[in-house]
Image (cartoon, rainbow, N blue to C red; front, side, top):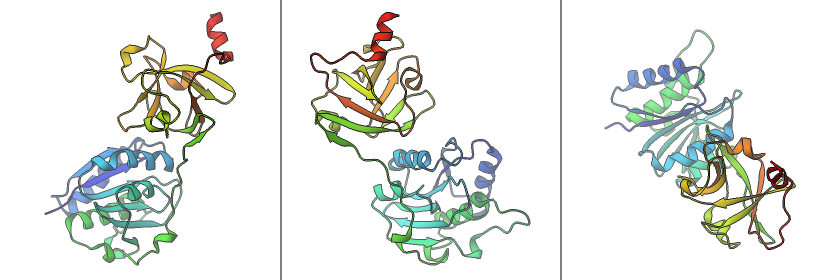
Length: 281
């Protein structure tokens, strides 16, 4: 019985490549199902792809994960994990998700010509190398060691994600992800905020750079007014900054990799410059 292939890429701007991958997999084994996780990763944004895969891999069925986000030529690998196989570039794209599912006990370089589609022109890596390898593993037509030589796990490229810091009654985090609506997901969890006495329903000081913004934590959207900002726990269990019927990235100076500090308001907390400007309006 064949396993499914869960497919993530940055190919949104060239959808025919996505169809070609589906076609290659079907020609190798029509029984293999391809699940499209997303193909809207910004072109070449390895960190965005790794985070999207990390957020979704727990919902994918056992089988093969095929990831393709490659801003430049890079070595290709396959990894065997407790939940199946991962196939993709050795640039950190796969690393966080592989670690989350329990790590890899075997890693190989995709170097065998037996599992590549010959091309008379330039090689399209995802179609000609990654798709055949994923299909061969999913259909059981190859073992992982058939695909190429072993790689030392220590030599595989990791992706280091920022850690949350707790200092002086504040939680210092970072924006990991901005979705299509302008909502900014942070690497901060509800448990991190609880450590400094912040719980759902509280007002919170959100410091971005030198400016402090007063914002509330409400998981219920209806608890905030139109165009008002809020913190909430997103579907992946992380704290996110959202603006009702607006974009957090337009209301606040937020973007990926921007540092954000959360702390509990105290009596006598200074009013921020942005607060004064809003009051003047």
